[in-house]
Every structure is written in C-alpha cells, then in structure tokens.
Image (tube, rainbow, N blue to C red; front, side):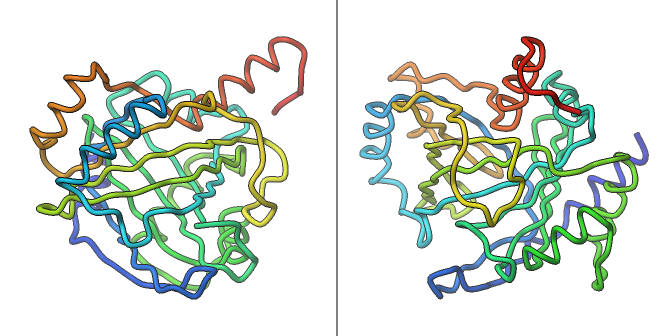
Length: 265
C-alpha cells in the first residue's frame, strides 16, 4: 500500500498543458496530467440528440471537439492487465499509445498511463513521434528523461513481455461546461477494434463494438456532476454502466479462442 500511495501522490501534481499541430496544421492544446472521476453511459442516437440539445444551455462544443482517436493498448501475452481490470479491483492500471487521427511515423503521439483507485482516475501522458513511441514501448529505447517516462519505465519492467495487443479507434465529440472547464462530456461512436495491423499508421478499420445506433457517453469531472445533467439522465432513465472498449474487445478475442477461432498468445 505504501508503494501504491507513492505512485498516486506522483499523479497529484499541477495539470500541465502543451500544444502541438494536428494533421491539418491546427494548434491543439492538451493536458499531460489528469485527476478526475469518469462516468459512462450507453445511449441510443435518439437519446444522444436529446442530451446534446439540452446541453446547449450549459456547455460549449470543444474547440477541437470532433476528432478521431486511435489507441494501441499494451498488455502481457496472457492479457493480465485487462483481465485484472474486468475483475473491478480497487486499483487497476493500463498503458496505451494514442494519436488523433491516423498517424504518420513523424506525427505526435501520446504515451499514456491510466490508473484508477477508489473510483478516481489518474492519467499521465507524454508525447513523442509515432516512431519514437513504438521504439520506446517495444524496446525501451528513449533519449529524454522525465517523471512520466520513469513511471513508464517501471511499468514496462514490471509487466514482463508487455507488447501491443489491440488497436481501438472511434469518433469523438467533446464538450465543456460554460461554468467549469473541468466538467467535460464526450460522445464516442463508430468504435472499432482489431488485434492485427497493430500500428496507428495503418488506418481506421476493424470490428464494431457497439450497435450502429448507439454511442458511449463519458462524463469527466473533478468534483460532482451538475444537477442539470443528473436531472437529464434521471428523467430519461439513462443509467451509468461499466464499459471498457478494450475489455469488450478482449472478451470477443477470448470467445473466438474458446470456439476454435483465431489463436492468441
């Protein structure tokens, strides 16, 4: 528990922002440190449109709100990280590499460690080019030094054999509160996964996780959910759910394996 406390304390630092240009040459600003609650809901397209209509009174569309996000999830050969996560433990963690849009080898990507302890999500990220990130995560080679990279080093050393396992991509619309920038709502759809072509440079394709007429809402807040949002969800009988994009992909992988489909490590 002392080790865990030290890890979490290292996450409780001031939020750091940095800027880079996306593939269209637009400057995009991102935080490198997060501490917040994340609450998820599955909604139909009709419910999504209703919520977005109601939200107009209280929220702005994020400046870079419509984007396509691509992630590579790293795990051990026996999928230890996602197996633990699906058991809903008090503490869990994951490692992924993220790009906004299909990456090129010289595109900016984000190495992210995400930890959850007692419902609170702690996320740390650092940026490198796609080629630098993959070289580092797959072979441990990197030139720079920082607190975040030291945490990634520990992660790579602790989980033996960790390697790319699944690519997940999705379209995201993001919004933030007019009164509290830390209160954010995102809508994800067209969530696709694949366990082959494990590169952010390959493109957007794979197997859908959700039915076509469904979206995943994520509410992200450092404190409480505003009453107006709670009222919208309650009146429309929209209830929070435990939903993991990577977790759902893993369950399909295991189902296929159990039924004599593809063979996995």
